[in-house]
Amino acid sequence: MLTTLRVGFAGTPEFSALALEAILAAGFEVPLVLTQPDRPSGRGLKLTPSAVKQCALRHEIVVIQPRSLRLDGKYPDEARSAQAALDLAQLDVLVVAAYGLILPNWVLTAPRYGCLNIHASLLPRWRGAAPIQRAIEAGDTHTGVTIMQMDEGLDTGAMLLVESLAITDTETAATLHDKLAEQGARLIVAALQALPLGTLTAQPQPLEGANYASKLDKAEAALDFTQSAVQLARRIRAFNPAPGATLQLPAIHDVVKVWNAVALTATGKQGEPGTVLGASPEGIDVATSQGVLRLTELQRAGGKRQSAAAFIQGWAGAPKA
Image (cartoon, rainbow, N blue to C red; front, side, top):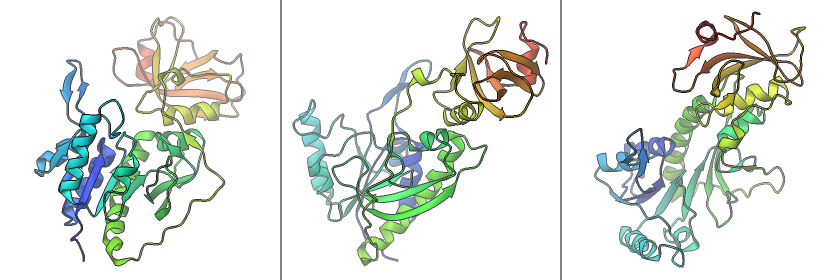
């Protein structure tokens, strides 16, 4: 097995850290890691290093955290410092996974083999920041991981490896994230092993079928019951764990977060969209434009996640089923 490549790594969250661990475990030399600056986290808003930085420090790898890589941007000194670090590292390839910064052309062309991206979608289906969540929300039955040769476009580069993964009817963004992170870690190791052998075939992305997976916005969290029960159930799963779907219930002043729900399409119940039709240990039934949405796991503001049965016990305004 050829593991002589000098591999740089650029990433930030847990999704990326799993790939970095896999690359190191496979025996590749990683002289340099790029990640986002430490961010305030927790109730005390303590500056916390990213999951990738924590991994790199455990392995005693040099870490740089520029706020920008644009030499003509807002932080040119940080970009020039990063450029010097990349030149010094003499990378064969830079692996990029959920890094969070746009890579200018000087970065894309610095390593001998350029930059490889681990993208959590079957490109070009979902380009952009939130492919996992948007795939669930759209009702896709399959997603997967694409190892892509990066270019200056937004997730438009040639595909080197592609592997599909089924999306189950109960999949949440959290569970799908974990599956795709493991898949991406395995595929990037395979790509790096094949890279110096010349056995990877670059396939241009199809011209049709591209969609933009926009970043999730808290403004999207409030459930719109003029949508169908099926659509709402998908959105709840897509927004689990963050930012979380929310709604207002009678006699509860704060918004309630909904963690899980099921769509009931033939209940015989009906009412104006948003009307609570009944509550039982099985769930809280809410009318939608098409079908009934049964809320099965909820959370009050400042409280813990609860089953519908436990939630109802503390809800004075709960209607009877």
